[in-house]
Length: 263
Image (cartoon, helix red, strand yellow):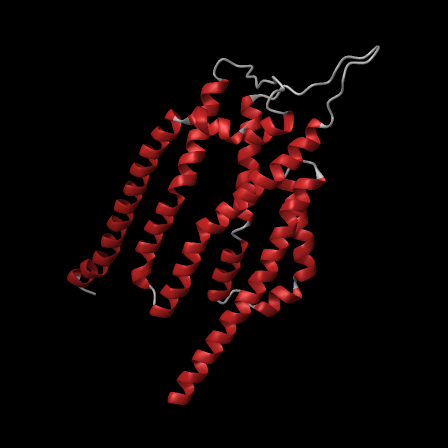
């Protein structure tokens, strides 16, 4: 192979790397700008995330949040700003990824993958909304129920939540629910790549139930409410994935049959 042919073979790779670098820099720039904006609004965002706890206590309860280290509140707001910026820039990141890989796909592949990319942020937001609007109120009410009033010979037991611990738990649950709702996307991509099929998922349904609820118990707080609230929709999404993969298999078989009939 001559030097010229080697240079020509390296040229497309170099152009792809430059394009990838350009798109990554665009994502980082937008992320940095959104991060600054989120930091300026960090207190408002934190107040929004605190609403389920405020409602569990009661708005007129006069309860408070505390921090025990001089730097704790500052680091908490930085962590919150990073999480919020990542949440808001996720669609842009997915768009850039799609624009980078789309030119290398066939037309039918573009159609299927574009739908999956569009559904990714939607499913994540649905999972996060389920955690925030359904799971948080029930779980916080359950945890607060362990408070006790002062009685003769005993001191009252009251919750004084730390800002960092509360935010860490909120982010953990939102990420757990949001990422878990991406299960259909992962399974559909694996099926599209030929790694699994609907028969495999049906045959492994019993194991999937055990694994799903085991993972739900591991990544949620130690209460039955959160575990059931996470495990049940994931199980439903697993069943929906089987149905979608079946449709995909029927469409692929139909296309192959039409091609054979034309030839």
